[in-house]
Image (cartoon, rainbow, N blue to C red):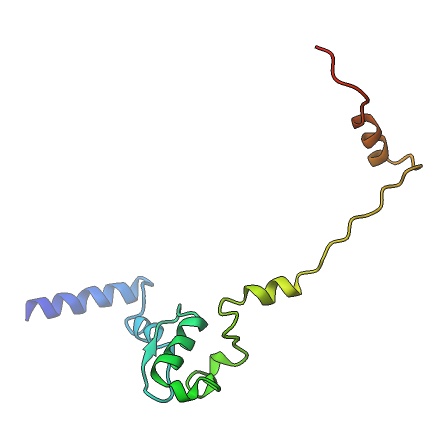
Length: 121
């Protein structure tokens, strides 16, 4: 009995001092739940792990993984981490043509950097 009362007192101190709420870890651990088998996944589970669950446990649902997890809407199994989509959307920066006859600072610096011959020692 003394151990239980000590645990209750420590929980009361934590909640009074702004510490973690006692029910928060339970909510975080059950952030993703499969609609079919009710298996839970933590909040930091990636979409690739959820899709792996769909293919391993519910092979007949792999064509429509949203039947297990709503968060898998738009998931691409060929690109599980989404890196290809990010690279495809990244804008291509075009190099500006150098102003050959201009008097701007960049052309002056370029002219100074171009030397004919080797440095003398």
